[in-house]
Image 1 (spheres, one colour):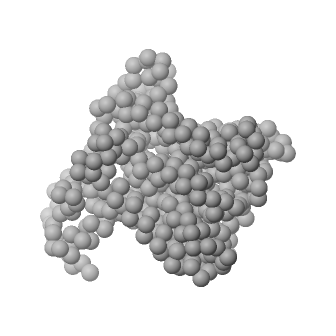
Image 2: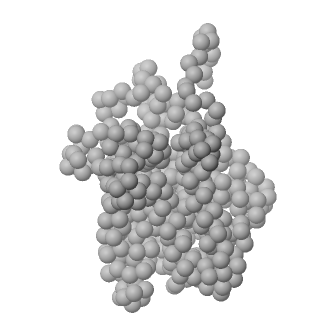
Length: 450
């Protein structure tokens, strides 16, 4: 027993995080395979249950079956639990429960927690965990309370409250799962495209969840005074606002004369464009019929999905900071500057290397996966690429092909979802045998670029 404990203590934080998500997915798979998890008391196959559990744990939202019409109340609660734990992180839950019991939290647990939520330092990690846990609960409860004013009059008190809680958690965790199959299967929010109240609440929950836990803390500590914010917060807030506004304008222009806007008023077109721009940043809801959108719009959405949300948040993607660093490095090159600068601050030397690694890893995986799925399923490359980017960026948007995919494609998307939630750097380091950064002693030699 002592030998096993010693071996486990030597496992790196990265491997523990990866193992934690895998165990959580397998537990979810087991519960979803039970006949009680479906409305017709039928047994779901392992692969379909695994895909759904992965999608929920990785807060993606890609589904094989309509959540409301296929899964029973028990199955829906399992999915919602996986979304909640996967959204704010299983380590956040674990350490929060341990801290409630008054037990001491060891240095190894703190180290895993630091890696799990991308904390800049280990100091104050337990306090930060409590902030994340209680902050999430308060925001989700507030969202559910506001949504109840829409759902309760339509569905009755108890069912309305349940729908409000489910959609609030799903939106805040950027999961994209919905129960709108109660009205029409696989419809997402297309039936409420013109409801400003519901759309704005969902959008706010998505944005708040996608900003990141450290951004909330910094905004609160600095009382929303921009000049006092940390560089990370400034970049996240600015990039988030720019992408939402730019995305709204582009989608509005691209779809203006398309069938997706047919018979819609100007205000409805603006709302649909705004919502789709916001949700594309890894939330997975949609008010536009994606299968009717132009290819130019779909490709633009692929770009937005790839960027995703922010580090240490419930969102996926390469992250807004990675996108900002890569963009700023281009600007620095044009200005003949050796280092990347922003808001009067200089970036660390290795930050560009990490950003490039994340970006290229995502691109390579998506291209390879897209080509395989396109060939297997005999579908267009852009359709396959849309599905793969949606999976790895943990978005959950689909053109409608997910329920029809074969076993191999389903497994590939499951792996992409897990990769996207855990993070490329975490997974690469989890399988790395080197614990320390090695400094090269080889001689320099210049090569030509461009």
